[in-house]
Length: 287
Ligand code: 13P
Image (tube, rainbow, N blue to C red; front, top):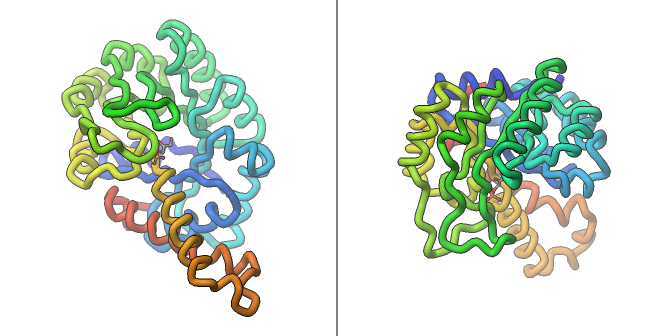
């Protein structure tokens, strides 16, 4: 059975650790995330972007794959599947397809519009027992050509969104999706502290988890971050392991071209990466 993320993140706040949100892309990815979380006895939070959901065949396929794999792999830790950076319509479609948890990313709208759209989704998700993440202060990324630092959220705006009754809040604190550039200024902990002082015990979400150094991860957790999103790092691990296999000519030996063999090193690399992050985020044995 899939669960919403509300309990797992409340426990993370009181236990002072952060649940890793690992973005999936396909069947192998999903399986790798679930296996790693089970081995580490960590709650499993499978994230998926709208684009990746489309790639996999739609929201229903995603929910079914996560649920069915959890059952057939005998996963005993709590498992959730969460829409990442959903549009308003994307949230509605994911909810309709059975997602137990969604993120509405209204950060691109003026704050009043973000508040109104988030409010409507609070109402709907409360009725259905679905957990809701909202966002203030867009998180930059390479695709936006951002170099040096991501956006920093306004604490008053964070408080306005938090008091609508969402479950957890993503706030920009200089974090960026993708690899951090050489001249990255690091996370803005003053802003994080200000936000924390305005939203009480509400779990905070740190996006752009790829490559954030250990000391910054630990400080973020001590300031209320209870969910850390990781995507690029697993993609890089998968690509590197797959490249090594092909460069070593393994696909040309015997039946090395069989996808079950070709994709195995990348699959195993994702498992190792997820396990490494679970240790870093302090979630081992926290299921
Ligand atoms: P990275 O790709 O930088 O790990 O960020 C993932 C993320 O924040 C997804 O929402």
